[in-house]
Length: 120
Image 1 (cartoon, rainbow, N blue to C red):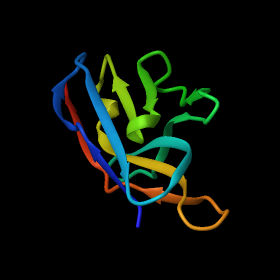
Image 2 (tube, rainbow, N blue to C red; image 1 turned 90 degrees about the vertical axis):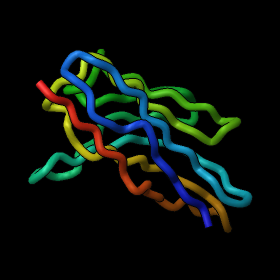
Image 3 (cartoon, one colour; image 1 turned 180 degrees about the vertical axis):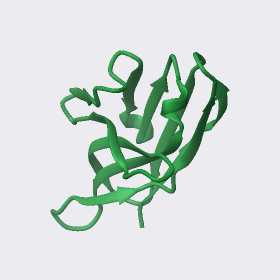
Image 4 (tube, rainbow, N blue to C red; image 1 turned 90 degrees about the horizontal axis):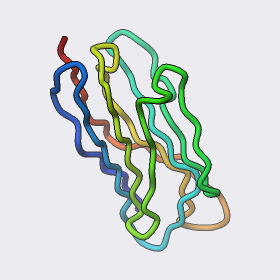
């Protein structure tokens, strides 16, 4: 069974930075696209950033220029560097990955989420 485990969340002040990590673990799997989503209280979960197997990236307009997604394939880990944080970034951040572990099909996996709180 493959698992995604996030870390790196916490409480920071506006203007500060955080780096989130999401590590995939399990036996004999491969990962395709990895993404970060977030969900603020009372709001729907929203897309934040994606990194594709080609190395290409995509960002939500609200974080473009402030957040950077990166990936260490050797460690099966994706990162989200978040700079210039504002209270509007406060949310639970979730890692999402398309993973193939048995057979030819890629299955979506979610991490448990990590809380990011930005105070003004």
